[in-house]
Image 1 (cartoon, rainbow, N blue to C red):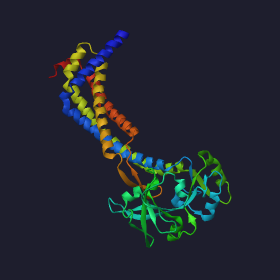
Image 2: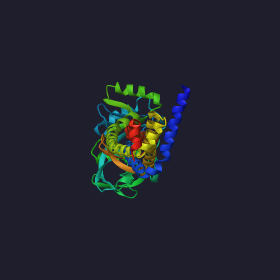
Image 3: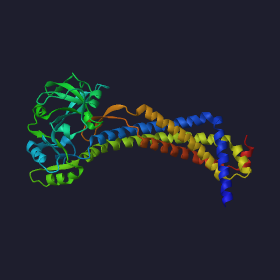
Image 4: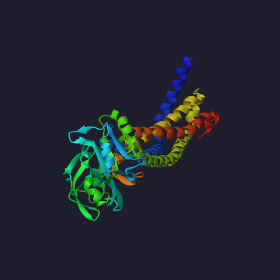
Length: 400
């Protein structure tokens, strides 16, 4: 049995080596198959890198020990509302981290303004966030990278680096229309790639009268004493009869924000890849059928000399998989070089505001692309391999 297995493996190696050595004789068709598969992988990875970039942006926005408080029943800040009295009660809750200046809890106002996109000139919804002094301690990844901080009590704004690079009028020195007035842009901020980089920030106390909001807010961001304090904090607020609020971990809130967009993009990318993949399968089938037809006499000769059908099938499949692997690798490399790190803006379908992000070609996406290429190669080589194994020896030997 062992001798038979060794002999079978030797046949596999011999036939496969023969096929691979003969690849230069079929260079044209082989390159065509690889280009087709490379195109499929490049497009698939490129589209899915959009969803990965959005997910990375949202993940970077969330701290493990942060929570957000919204009105009960709200899914976004846009549909939420808290009174000034609500925010004072929330700030006194147990479990909140504190500094010498008080609790690290920031009641915030969230409104939308129109700004033209730099790339197209069309108007887009850009978030304008009114913050309070604790906001910069709650978000410990905040960094001012250009200009200065806005002055409290003044009609000034700072813009996220993502918003500044995607929309008009958000560079230091520009004048931003807010209501019926122009507010100067005095600084540019970064937030470790998080969603705050898509926003414009101003003093909430100044923004409230500009939008006739009185003493009201949309949300409250809180830094907890520790991640373990979340349960106590949530239970206290949701059981308080004076409040009607919902409490979420910041990570859970931002994860929910990406669900619709990610599903849409992933579905689109998968559909495009499936359609293109079908075409690539036909190209691979044609390539391998051509290869089998060109070597029919050689394959028949080997079988007449005692080579079994199994090694023939494996050799043809191996050739097809090698072409697919090379094509997939080229497609993945092209996707990485063409898409990784490209910064753009897209609509958040939950909040209906723009968010800026960078395409993220991850290792996981590249592996998915390679696996998809191998699936195409396997299907494209399977039927030609079966044909080669079943080809009558006498008929094949008579072919010219």
